[in-house]
Image (cartoon, rainbow, N blue to C red; front, side, top):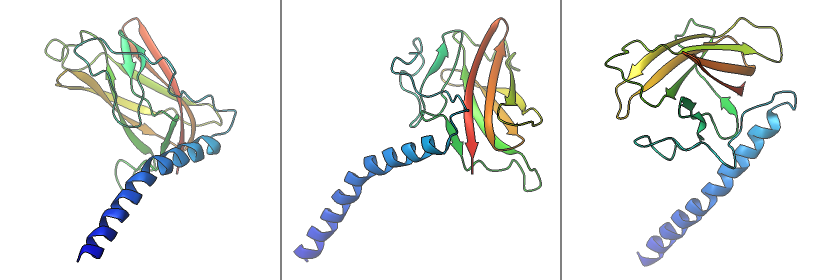
Length: 173
């Protein structure tokens, strides 16, 4: 019984020790698959820190990018892999992304003024289609559902009143 328990504990510790290495290898693999001609937006050494009461740390695998007038949490490695389709008959790739703005209030603005556009940089393609809705929070934010016509290098820009925020992401299988 003791031998089985010792083997199980050893296996658990070995598995946990290998997670960071596997994650780093996956990130390096993702970066290698991105062509040098695609100027992806990667995590900064000095990332934007959102003002209070917004979280100081983004979701795992994301990094803060922008200003207190408009910010997002794009992927640290600049890639979106394995996106699904919105419906089984829809050929576009679906991604949802949260956008924040200091002072955004869903009570006074139930339909966000945020407009998101996107164009493929590495080949001709139709533009992406996007629609913004509010997220009650706390704290409140704007959720954008994007339908992206094809894989490749995409420049995505959010427009909110007089603010603009642009990032570049690589979409792959």
